[in-house]
Image 1: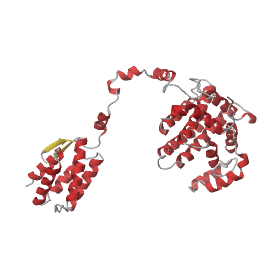
Image 2: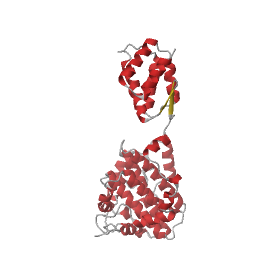
Image 3: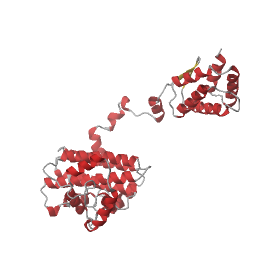
Image 4: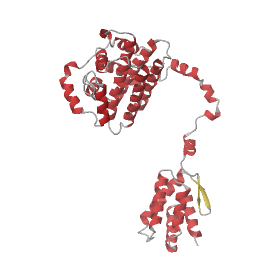
Length: 382
């Protein structure tokens, strides 16, 4: 197989290799892989990596997972996606090379990007639209030129910032894909910025811009999975070599042996992180707050409010509000002793005939602890 000639060909290649493997992954899961490899790139930014080659490898992997994420979301063409925002100009000052001061003034105005003008520029500049990955990298090099003020750590910091904004775009996917599309392009732009800085450090000639990352990308995605060597990846969900690397940090056994580091069950999670009180006092009766009790509180409170007029209860306004609040809090698992006390305080103002009607009604619809506690409380009122 030949090395892909265009960015969209790279896009199809990477996703064709790993589409089956990633089919059941969520966008969030794919995104965590992107974050993971960008985290590896941070070692290059902080000079922790022993060789420059490792930094370029992580850069290629970051691009690979970016392509995978776009494929998982359903982007038809990453070339069209990038061109929409970067039609051979900076999207803010709309110049090439970008004018830093003009961009700052534009951003401070908070008027947003003029997408209509970018569309016009995209049509006017269509002959300049890149195809090959190296041509896209060269475009970004022309827009945002690497000069003496460029700093590896600052570039990585901006890439990390854009990753955070992309995370927000993924979180808002149920609302609109537009947020994702906009932020995904910015992540690509900063990957290109990092690649251009890497090549400037190596004194690459103008004609060789983009060769470094293309070669590294081909090393990672050589027309097949580099691990199982099949055109459609058949690897296990977790590679043993990765588990071995992680175990050197801390063996799994170390966590198994530590009681205070063991994971709790879902039921324990509810008890540990439950908001509100675990026991409720109604008059002289104390009852344990459980999911069944919460369901009963919602059901009985709503039933009383629905039957208020039919049974001629004539509940005072504050009592109705207390039942409404209790039903809402119970449905949100946020009942507190204070909300129960508010209800019992208002029930003292309910006429004796209405209190008897409430008791009889509760006896007829519920035999639970909550109904029993309310009935006993109503009977205890002098």
